[in-house]
Image 1 (cartoon, rainbow, N blue to C red):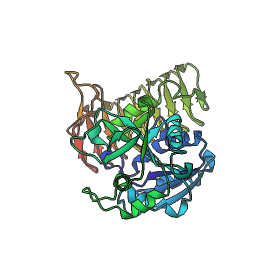
Image 2: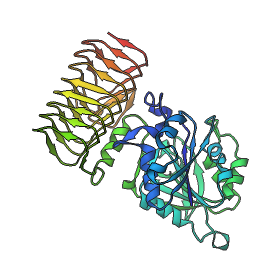
Image 3: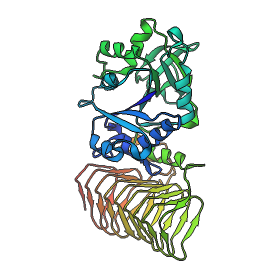
Image 4: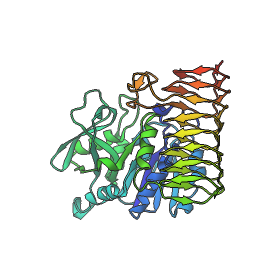
Length: 413
């Protein structure tokens, strides 16, 4: 059986982090979202993948190549215009000759649930063939997702995002599909959102009498991220329990203290006086310390410099970023090629301890710092307010205060 992963979209709600990469390549617990998904699918025994790419496809192709480093085979299909999930799936028709799994590339699902979906439709079709089956899950905020109405073991109605959904049961983005879906894809018309939706294609099949079954996904095994601050929740979840495998591939100087599960990449140097409280992931070729404090559930990418007297807590630091000295970063996402001047501080708590708002939205987090997109630079003693989102290549001057939503290429002095 092959697995098709849809990864062509930008993920506009993740802006500004998706201006230079697709949403599926945003890192969680030291790996892109889609890499976690691929590993879970492979754990089921599937090694043939078709990835539908489009927006900034070079980042996905460059990272995975043909999949050999992961022990899998990857074929790529390009969706040049992002016209919806039905259009994306139709692009793979010539590469499919049997029933297959299809997954949304921006959702992480556990291998046990993927296996459950793969097996749920077996023997239910004509001649004991495979019948279309969807993984479903209940959510408190179903209006942000496509929802399904269920009768018995079948799905009778599928709705795309709507303000007042009739049920809390949503489409979890894991499908077992057969060849019947391609005929429906070709008959699908544009939705009100201007896209060709796979859910509309499935509704056509249901209306024509084709059975579409469902199976339930475990709540704790399903991770979806919609907004930049959701990356922190996902990162926290993925680093809990067995999420971090403690391994030290770099070099530790004298008087380095490691507590809990800490993973250190090859070529990384951790200097004297550094204190690390796991779970923490540090990528390859980093320089950490001296005398810095890295707190739990922090994931640092490759080629980073975290220097003297820097404290980082519960944050994601992407590749090639420098936080050289005397800075505090808490509950934040710092993208690639950022450089924080000495004494830069990021606030992460309101005085009233209420939920922090960002871009006019409630993040649902009592502690939330900031989102710094790619190429942001700060001068000495710069301050960044809780809930601030800073666009690409913005410069924040010495002693300046950055607050609110700041567009890319801005100057704050």
